[in-house]
Image (cartoon, rainbow, N blue to C red):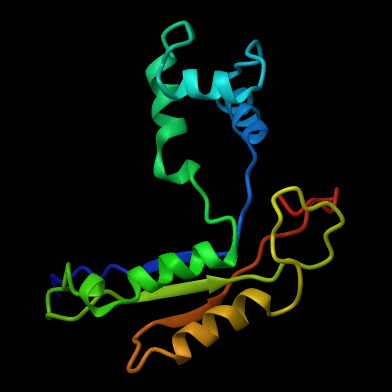
Length: 161
C-alpha cells in the first residue's frame, strides 16, 4: 500500500466578480442575522474595525469582512494581474511537491449563460472564461496546468449570483 498523499489544487474559475458594499450587509444578514445596521461605507469601516456592538460577534464579523475571500477580482485586468503573479516559476516553485515539481493548477471553468439578472457583473456568454484561461495557458511554455469544466444549475429566478 502506498503512503503517498496526492493533493490536487482545483480552482473554481468563474471570471470577474463584482461586489458592492451593500452585498457585504446582505452577507451579514445571511450569516449572522444582523439587520439593524444601516448599510453605509462608514458603517462598513466600523464593522471591519469591530467598532460596532454586535453582542459578541464583533471580532467574527471583522474577521469575515477583512478576509481574503471578501475581496474579489472584479475585472479581467485584476484577474490578469493575479495570474501574472501566480503563473511565474518563482511563485510556482516556492512550495515544491515531494518530487521537486512546481505548483500545478486545475482550472475549473464555467459558462454564465441564460441569466437575466447579473448584479455581480459576471462575464456572460459561451466560452468567455474558458477562452480567456486557454489563451493565458497557451502563452506559458511547458505549463503543467489543465482546464476542466464545471456546472452550476441556474436558479429559477435566472439570477447570475
